[in-house]
Length: 170
Image (cartoon, one colour):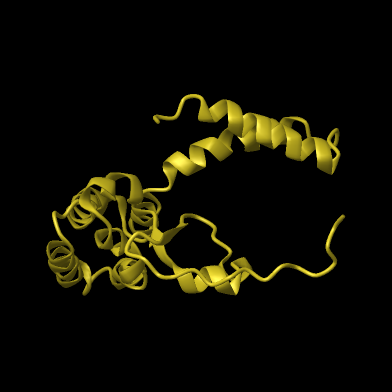
């Protein structure tokens, strides 16, 4: 029997390995439940942020700027990343303020992965593995538009993700 009132979730204790919320291209943060917002930290995708920053400068500058952004992202520690970010702002701030502002506004969210163990950093820097799963779902649901009921759409999405999970490393 369905409940008419939503269940209230018990508060979870904060741990060192708590949840990390990935924010890639389009994240609807107002839709995130309050109890989840308190327990999560946000991580912006470096690949998407790099594209956003490079779109704000002429193509003649993009090569050097991309290298500087990679130096920030691939820094061996948070302190080194913050130094590289400061150097980036100093080098490009005067002439390309929009690009520097685009990067600076998400500074904490871009560097959140440094709070986790180093062996996880490669997985936490980008949302592309997550997006690749949903690309398959998006491709199939667009092709079958109009012929799905809500129930069959859920079933199809489940089966597509289940099939995609067979190729994931365990």
